[in-house]
Length: 314
Image 1 (cartoon, rainbow, N blue to C red):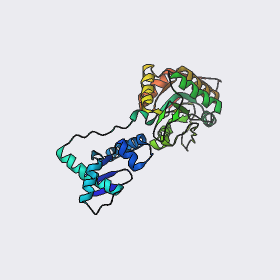
Image 2 (cartoon, rainbow, N blue to C red):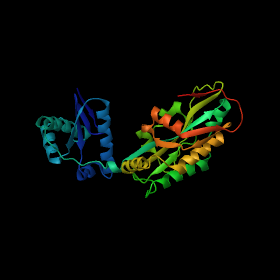
Image 3 (tube, rainbow, N blue to C red):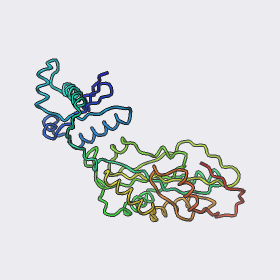
Image 4 (cartoon, one colour):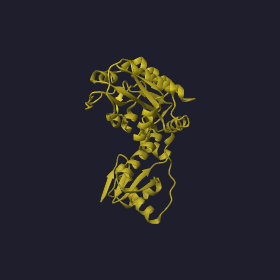
């Protein structure tokens, strides 16, 4: 099977994938003033998408004007253009693959690639009835969202102000808290995809609409895991630093968790949350971490309303 993706400069023959890689001078001559760094990053993402979707062998083919011109002269049924360049790359990839040649190609500036981390501020809370549940998940004020973002930015030393350099590249970090606590049931809905990150601009905020979820409050008290998702956006190098810095500090960010705890307490009608809350990356949150979060916090009653038992709801 032979197929072509002329837009991305990709050709395929069975499991062999050929990808054209232009050097800066050739790229400028062919594509004008388009961003060369964005081109390299876009190509990198295309290749990763192919590798992750199915078993393929990717061959990067550095564009050679001389070699391509000779190929075009021999294959007169092709006219110069993206179609011909992609077909040339496939022929070249077959030869490279058979000879097992090692080719040098420009590397994408992965350190500038816009990336994101979803953090979860985790609050195990004691909820008595439906009215308290509704109050717990009510919206935050804009001031509270701004304060949470500001405290988290200040936690990381030496960070630049966030700025988009292009569609695929940025510098600095931007912290974007959601505007309400969310239940554990909808954790998967808050993980951003690459499209969200690429379309993000300075000043954007995340507005989270809680979908319908079924959580019954039976007689007595239920422990529920409420979470505040916070999206960190920045270049890959800075996101790697943020992960390492949080890990080194044992995910202890008291100025942020204090704001989350206070927000939860303002919304709880019958109980009060105390102890240390935890904030951690989305990918590290699991059942073991839930148990640790519950053990590290305490929820005491504000009133003398009678309760019968504690029940974990997952």
